[in-house]
Image (cartoon, rainbow, N blue to C red; front, side, top):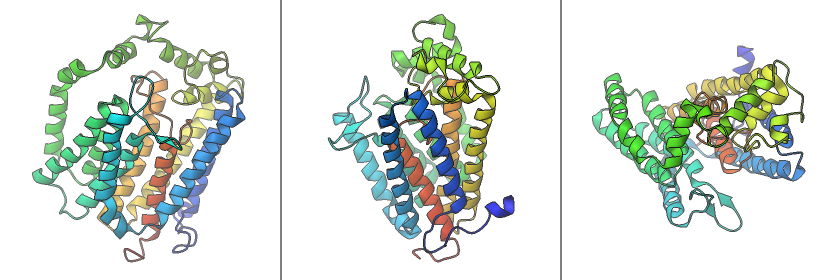
Length: 368
């Protein structure tokens, strides 16, 4: 199996797409649409909307696969500044329910914070790809500043969950760049020391989420309702599940947001433990294939960028599954390529397009 998965991409130099990774992504998206149809109360309109968004994501994947690595490195600062500008625009003109997280341009409505999940690793990979590694104090401090600015803007929306994940994407890349353990220890010590200050600056609803995570039964009909109902859905699926479209927690409206943040709960209730294992195995295969491709990239820029993108894809999945299972506080992170949503799906697929493009050019000169 490993030998087959390691074959060259389909028509290298022509399509620049990897057949195995593309197949795995399509299967995952197909499962997502099937679960969405059930979670969305059999509304075909919802499924067609998501299909269109995934189609846009596939177009983005193909476009990104064709961009030469040299251009990516040249454009990285400008793409980062553009994403930063969109975050600033969101602070003044953003819309949303209780938070300014979206930009509404009339024709389209998107979440700029999702674009930063790709722009930040691209910027850092372009920088560290030109510097001697492992990074020293100067390059480490510069990287932390580049991370802190967009993370701070996202946190003020407020969207603490996305801010933490954007920060994680930058720190993951710095770790992969060979950040010294002494510096890692100092940063961890500083983060732990800052926890009381962070707690005091959290919004009331964010503090309530943390307290509810520690004890959901403190407010079972209020703040604790979501996670209690989610755990009931996950546990009631048993070994084989109740069957497709037979979930009671979502169809009887006990489960909140069943088609977005809590779609994994619907999957677990309808397909049971075996269905969950299949889906998690699919995520694992995608991660392993993409990591293999990233490791074969010809330069530091490609390896850092590819490995960070796929690591964050896997981390998003882990955070969502842990969230709906009650292992971490609810942070509003969608399940990649399964939850309903356009900006997240397009960003994820564009990231895999970058990996395919970098991998397919591993035997050619940059710009080929």
